[in-house]
Image: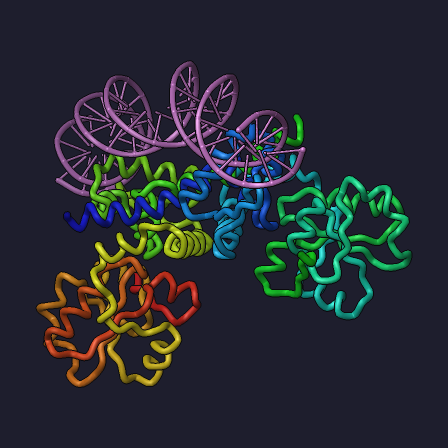
Length: 222
Length: 222
DNA sequence: TCACTCCTCAAGTACTATCTTGAATATAGA
DNA sequence: TCTATATTCAAGATAGTACTTGAGGAGTGA
């Protein structure tokens, strides 16, 4: 077998991995799975497609080695194969944000205007948590908080926040976080809190980035 | 327009960027362009396809924002849009190497058995260059050396190395480097040098990684 | 302006991807 | 063992991708 043919096969294999990410629904699945493991039924709800189609896409991700599975009773849980996959997903978003013409327009259409929302960086938040003068709220679905969250963060899924604002201590700044830079939950949370007269900012990115930066995290006792 | 629809479009855009890398020939093009800019005719030779097909793939990469162009006379030079793209390509290779079943087998088939070839890390090589007790040889094509190389490296393309071994100073270790971890030139160079009784190692990766690590580089005077 | 070079575009063919629907499989609990 | 639940598989319509060949543009230099 010639070198050309073997080289082509090697680079085809790299291409297969990229191709697995080369579909919007699979990209959404990776974004959700970066929060922690989930079963097929939950994931089909996240991407708004049938269970059969979701299963099909998950199989494509598994064949490329991006995700692995675990069975628990009748349910099958999918998770990212490693934090490397999360790194790859972050690198892809960075390139797209920097060089793809339409990302800015689409991000504004999806997330709304962020120029009025103040953000806080990871390092600063870590200091503020250590100093104890901030309340950190995880506004992702409860399952994602259970799978892993910023140490000390309180879980208030975005759809329950309006009812629970009153439970948050007064006079303390609130920092909301969610899945990452293209997740709308924390933006919605900060807008709601500001309307209620609270001081609030969003973490500039989300839980996966915090985790990859090796900052303190916690997991629900199993 | 519903949130679902806008979110789908946003993630479709991420998918488009990944899809651009989702082809072996385009992956090869990115790997070559990580060395520096090249024109279409050269690139078609690198991937072993017609100029028309190469142009087609380059257009796909440009549409995704991964590469940009510059005209010089009748020639059009393509280059990576930024070092972010090089980061993305490295992240993709890492994931593929860690999780894709066939990469190991294909890499061995293409590169040969590397277990007998000693490698040297970037940090150690930088120290040795500073100490001046090593000869660094760039075995990539001359055009890539001209576009940028490790500071102090001497250009000896792999196909000229056999004739030029005698010009290398005796009694000094030789370090060969090329395009990256999946490039065969440096392996071939080290094997040839060892057969000629020289002490030789390969740099563990290649020029793009050296550049991204912000270690000293040089460019040919224009 | 003309011929030349380099590159892109268009048309055509074979192959691959995405989604839907309905059936098949695997486990849990009665 | 039987039924219910969760997931995967198979078939099929539609659309998109990858490559080839040949024509079309854009710049260079006589």
